[in-house]
Length: 368
Image 1: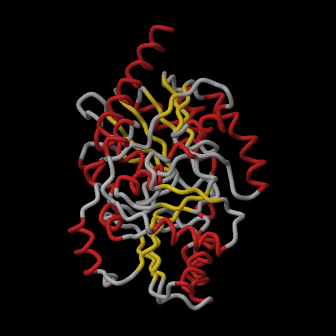
Image 2 (image 1 turned 120 degrees about the vertical axis):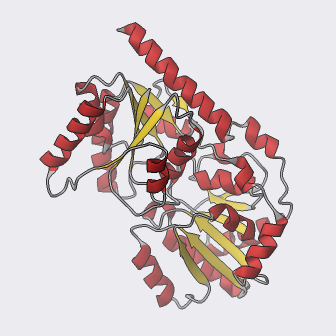
Image 3 (image 1 turned 90 degrees about the vertical axis):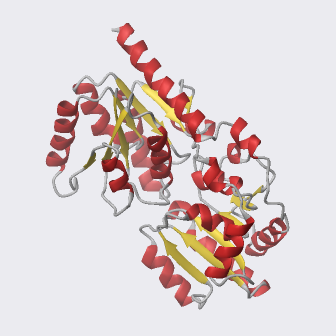
């Protein structure tokens, strides 16, 4: 069976990329071959990993300069490679992929919802609300990362929730790793607040920096780590410099050791404007981290008592008080069984996805 994953990119700390790679690593490659089609190429170590495992990577030509060329390339790949399934993890940009998949008789065409909002800006939201029904029209199967994300995009239609599962063993809390890493990074006596995610509007980075700046007034010994990169890199770094807290804020970029960095943090901070179900939220819980999360993030993510939600319209002082209060929740050795039973263990989840692929192929073939 051949499956084509359509994803925005394979940037480290990108939620959709993390989701895709977690399943790719654990799929039985003797039975299911997975290739990737990217909207944009961004430097990442995932490329070598995929190619070394036998997967192919296709990158969409710049559609802004030559839309006809981009569409022709999609049509050509889908015609020549003869995939059995296209698993499209982009909604609005998914239109040409799903259209040409149908044109080239790819039997299973999956549209996967990873969000609960189509855009940050109103005009983009209006545009995307016009485009998304077209993607849904050309798909014949719907997936979602959470019930909230599924209900948002598919509105009463039938869909399957595929959990943002992870390799639990890599993230379980380890005191020795914490002590060693905090010493190495010279934060032994610091309070470490951390965020994992792209530097983009959705993740609300400017607000996050404002909250941290307020926290510094209470605890000048605090530091803030932002793990991940994105389109707001320069803008947010300039803002940090402008308000004079650059000695306390560290932009760690795209890291392959995020599982260890969680160990060294004291609180994970996710003040997103919206989310489907953030992979970082599951990783953080497995690491036993106290987490403060905006209430725009689905409550389906809360599996342990370490997660606390707060509304974005609360004052900066209230956010700081919540960070301080939840940081006192010091038991990091959690009952991992809760996360396994909730369906976030990657091996069991990958088997579920594999079975679903096989069932879809069988049902659509029989229905012909």
